[in-house]
Every structure is written in C-alpha cells, then in structure tokens.
Amino acid sequence: MIGWALGFGFAAISIALAMNLWRLIKGPDMADRILALDTMTINAIGIIILGGIADGSGTSFEAAMLLALVGFVGTVAYAKFLLRGDIIE
Image (cartoon, rainbow, N blue to C red; front, side, top):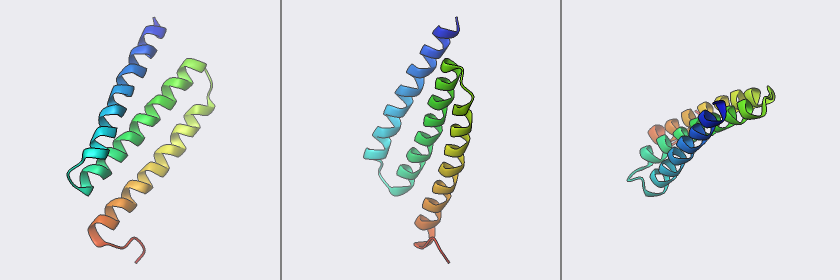
C-alpha cells in the first residue's frame, strides 16, 4: 500500500514541477518567476522526503532541511533585489 502512495506522490510532485518549470519560463514578470522558483524548491524538498521514505534512510531528511533553509534565504534575497535593486545595504 505504501508503494502505491509513494508512486502517486512522485507522480503528483513531478507534474507540479513541470507546471512550475512552465511558469518559470513563461512567467509574465519577475515576481512570477521568483514564486515559481520558490515553489520548485518546495517540490524538490517533497521529492527528497519521498525518496527518504522509499529508501528508509534518515539522511535525506537533513538534506531536505538544508534545502529548505537555502531556498528560503534565496527567495528572500531575490525578493529584496526585486524591490530595492540591491541585496546588501
């Protein structure tokens, strides 16, 4: 039963990643591209977590946590650059 759930999870997140990639390429302005990149980071975290559940390893959860931290800092930096034109004050 868990195999079916993991397969469905991988398929759903893969479809979401494809739609986010489309928004990243086609986005009408820079804010949409930043949101698409942030959502792609969240989807990548989901894939890492699902892979950790499938393998039964605990190290993937730490990798997902590190990716979440880096993704958050990156999104904040992109948004600050978009608003002010400068990251470091």
